[in-house]
Amino acid sequence: MEIEEKHNPNSHERLRPRDTPESWSELPLDLVLSVFKRLSFANFQRAKSVCTSWHSSSRQCVPKNQTHWLVLFPEENNDNNSCTLFNLEEEDKLYRTQDLGLEFAKSFCMETYRSWLLMCNGMHNLYIVNLFTHERIDLPPVEAQRGVTKMERTLDDDVFRITSHNGKEYKGIRQRSPVLWIDEKTREYVVSWELRGLCVVYSRKGDASWNQIPETSSCCDMVYMDSKLYFLSLFGQFRIFDFSGESPQQTFQCGVMVERFRLGIQLRQRSNSLSIVATKLVVTVTGEVLKVEKLWRPRSETWSFRVFKVYSSGFLKKHDRIYSLGDESMLLDQGITVLASDTDGFIKNSVYFSVSHGKDVHDMFLFNLETQTTELLHKFNCSSVQFSRARWFLPSFRQT
Image (tube, rainbow, N blue to C red; front, side, top):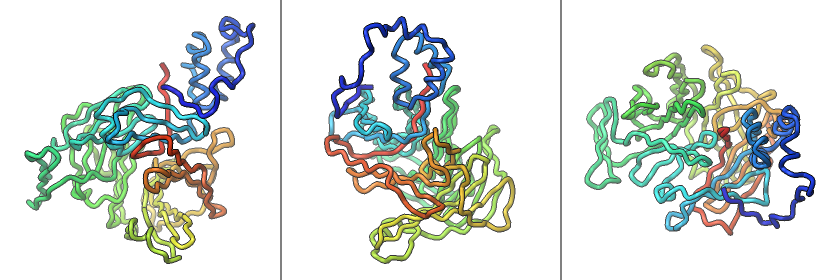
């Protein structure tokens, strides 16, 4: 990646003449590894280039990646086919990826998983791409459906005719509630999304079509973790599907209260009452499933959250509200919690979430469940960068 810096790139201290690459390579391995373990994500990458010995040693460490990055996608009418990356730890720097091709510039990012993006091109077909290695995985054509719902592409390539199981026809495609998971080593992956409110479809490594999951209409939210797909419908059907076998098997089902929400209208209301603008599923470190209600108070322009436990290794007779995450932090956009510590950069018992206001401002917030207060972590407003869309993600690097 190329680096654009607002400050003088030569302002940092240079190595002294006696600090040659040979002297750095002579440091004991355990000392080098100790240094690597303390480095931030970006500094880890810089340290790898000090000498060949350090580059080799870096393969035995995993860099800290507990900081959100923002990826800025180019304007559709722009000749620039690369992305600009912003690291929350380095406010003075922007990173630019290499040319990712014309199709990427005209594609829309549906979901992220670590450094992988789930992209949808102008033909509504999907593919997975790694932002840093540029590795790409093409997925089956969206019209290649296996199940009772049929889809065909018309003479106009961007128009689809969909026939549901009861014979009702629809025109156009809506791909909602996308889910992406990929194994960094084996490249096994699961991609899932909702097809026009009719059913959830998925594709795994080796599949030539999209496989439909019965009784999964009207999806509200989905999360995938540890070979399980957690599904919540707008009408309160909560289901768990086990993906460890050849085909997913439903292993759990119960009813969950889902209050209806209308995001666009409620954000414009000037009432000071709390309005639910989103309902999300979150899977904790221990495998518990939470229902999270994201609330907005228009007049005071404040955010709030309500958290309920809906699954804990079995049926819960009552979905109790919980007021503390303990030593965990919730990453709402990713649908997970992580263990928090002073060295990891995450604050315990807090919710990390992002909000977008048009194309020029993308804010990252921290909501403290104990104090019920919201803190603005970063407000990104860079008029010098031409972009049409942006998304926060939590990066990872595969060691090479």
